[in-house]
Image (tube, rainbow, N blue to C red; front, side, top):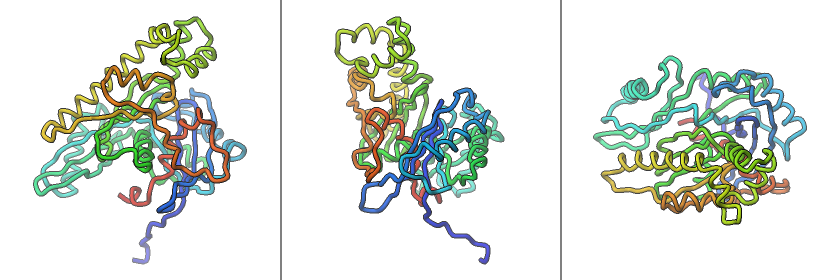
Length: 356
């Protein structure tokens, strides 16, 4: 017993290393009170530092984070313990049903499942699982896996900064956690869209996050298509996207025509996720009833209306900050606030989740 160490509920901060920027946030969570932001900040870096999800230049990203901590924070981040998001596009998650069995047998079952569905050798993966529900006859288990090369490259960055990682998880999980904490995710099955700069994560949430996939296009791709279609510079196209988007205006049809490939592909991928869930929920008759959009690309005018019309589902962009207390800190501008969703979702990770 002399060597037994008990877990202490110590502060941590959330870290989101994106396509060409990193976001950090520390949040104080007190039962019965709104989460309080203690510090946050954003720093850019050369996108070439990451290749296929692997951080190939950890020193460059470590330097960007060091500069953020030195001069770029609003408020302060006091903890060296960090919960870090991994790119959902480079992780795997899949719900599976197994007969009632021991934990050792469950591990053997998820290994077999991973060998069947994940196109990477087991020796190259970190595997984890969560038991979603259990009966005397069977268990519903969520399998999650990530490439060792990717996780180890993130670990190297944190090591260079003398930070202590307490958790790695897909970025979409962090977004779902923040929405759930805000009371937005209740009982109805929901599609969550996390629209980033170069990818869009699609997840099905039904009491827990069931499955996630990624579309290799995001808000920057929409800007590029507007730029090409309307013969504008990237900045001009980005301003046009942010001001008008695909909402009703005299420019609406021309912009929609320009970005149609991205929009149609997004709708197609959402429909695949809906079909996947419907097949699994056929016995219960449960149906997805809504789409919630988050992330920096979700604020484009007209996007939610377009998705609602095409998919015939209530669609809304969520502001997960309405019940978050920034105290005396100046909050990020409204348009920039969405980019902190993942970092905030990591920052509110509870000790219970880390232990389980």
